[in-house]
Image 1 (cartoon, one colour):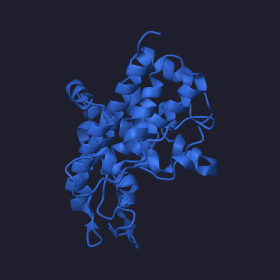
Image 2 (spheres, helix red, strand yellow; image 1 turned 60 degrees about the horizontal axis):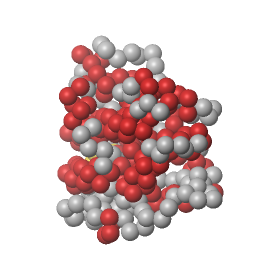
Image 3 (cartoon, rainbow, N blue to C red; image 1 turned 30 degrees about the horizontal axis):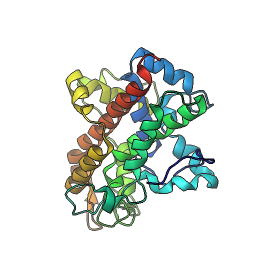
Length: 279
């Protein structure tokens, strides 16, 4: 993988999306809740740019800020990987010879853990790690038979007047349409707050310490890519003849929630290792 740094080390930004801004905010919000006080304090002292002072908003920076500036286009290929849809596993030589989300996430995590990055370098690392951790948990950022993450596959989405692409459905559609939480969970979710926080509340309430530890058992990008490949094949290889309706939502919404929970849990784990230990 080519180095992402150098004289123009921070001139990188994607035009690919995963989960949409709401999904990325949920991942950042969940991760922040699961950090230790020391790691939270270091996140707070690092995220000082206007508009991106919370981990939830920091996770959107590559899409809401960087992608709007052409000088950042160099990172466009690093938001996804196109694994062969029939492959058993992700293979770096075959699927990622010039870099992809798997190698980019690993490199930014490594840089974040270095002993003496400047404040601005640490801030940018947090932006990219938070965002890429969300990207890699969206299964269509790993594989789809159309070779474009489902963007080239148009199908009906509920009663929309026009067809939507499969990638958008997993990025945005299912989250925007999400069903209400169960009565037991709803009673524990505050209603007078932004939608992403309400969803984060719902997902946090459903987590147990044991489940959090299980999700954090691995944070290796290669292993996460294999998980995403298996989920994409099982649940997200939508075809142009499919119709995403109530039955699909009922069957697959739990998987969307699980991927958001995993992304939040694993983001918390890598930030804790990098920022939670005493200086």
